[in-house]
Image (cartoon, rainbow, N blue to C red; front, side, top):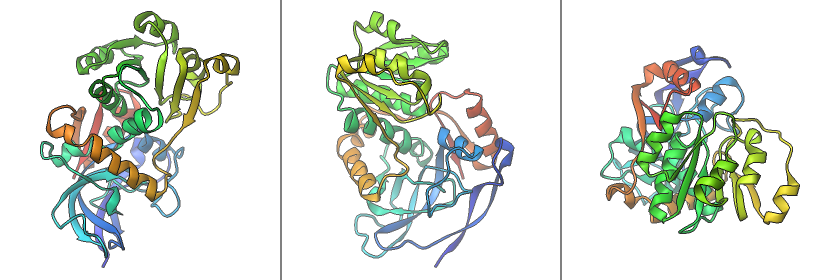
Length: 329
């Protein structure tokens, strides 16, 4: 049977003040699904865009409940689920409605919470690390010794990408408009810090790293398009995962063609369940154990009660955060 739950609600599109915690109803787990009692959820830039009306939820997902990731305990097993048991600690990504006290998700998309992490810490892992892992390795094919350029390097995805590059034996460069954040990223293992308040970074990358980037993880989009192509190495791969700097730009084909480079766009939210399950399995196989051995750790700016969701959005809007903001029930 369905259960009463609490969730962050978007009353109307606008600023952080439109957010409130209210009542919802969450259905039972269906075949191949689990229902999770959520302890905490990570806040993502996409949540702020959804609040403003720029990133609508996909069909079938509550339009007024944001949230793309969660961590909690399994409280119900749907028919046919054998890989989990009641009480198991799980985390994962969802297409929406993650900022609720209960979520329903396909069992094959859920990830085991490493023993070294609390549930609040685990809530900072799925969106950041799955996104970075997918962009750098599954799509970008980053290899040992290659150079990855990471935009918005002080974000949750960026700080995850630094750690993934280091563990894979790849070099990393990162851009930020804030020098202090770059210094903190270097403490995480960032090899080359590119201070880019004017949005220019290709020449500095060449100077510091001695060449172009083999893979670029781009969260900015149109505003960085020309510089990204300039910054690519021969046969480089530009992976665009965000459009914070605009969705339309003039493409510099004359600079792209001689490099024999590849440009690919990606978003996790709208992928088919089979693709998300395959990504979760690959991440579990190659990355997940590294949290227990100390190779990886989520970088958390702050953990706040869910009642403070408006203030958390305001902090993200002001670009005050380093790493992730986690909202706890």
